[in-house]
Length: 85
Length: 198
Image (tube, rainbow over all chains, first blue to last red; front, side):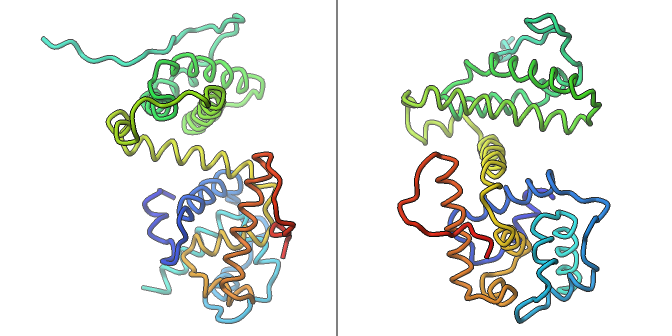
């Protein structure tokens, strides 16, 4: 994802320096964990449920998986875009 | 007729000091990233005088590495590898010269380096730092990075992870500081366990 595209998704309550760290994370996860074949990825419905969750999300496997999966990151951004359209 | 302004040039050669052939794809990548690399050297060292030596070393090293690996990477990957290694060499050099004072102020530096060059350097260096701190971060830390990256504010992150927003935020920053302290060889003064997989 391009830097400018990435920054457009960041939350409003960023701490100083956090944007740079998140950008580094974004680049790193796409380089090191692109997962194009979607090994171990949760179903799309699960990711939608995570986006919409207003209470504790109990699926620990998904929570652990997504942090190291660029494919899930991109899919969640797509989902958020669809939901806000 | 005006003489075109020329910056420093690196020695683009077919063989390294040991007589090993230097790969054409690496040499080509070096030409592509050269202007940016010069900018990063200016930003770190004050001028680009050392850029050629750093680039020649980076080109030799990456060429040998790719030959050993026997791989045929894409041009983009060659550029990234070369850029990252160049940045590593530059950081080593800057650290070695750490006591040298920059001439002029930060405002003077702006005249030498364009903003985009500076951003590129910062981006590369942050990437390298991230790779270093990664072993000291927990899966939950990465989940938080993920959630923040897709735009969740701390209130949302807290709800989804079943914790107070302030607790999650403090936990992430504590882990980052702790990881940073570890890689910088410093001991934390507090005995917190912020990096635990909570």
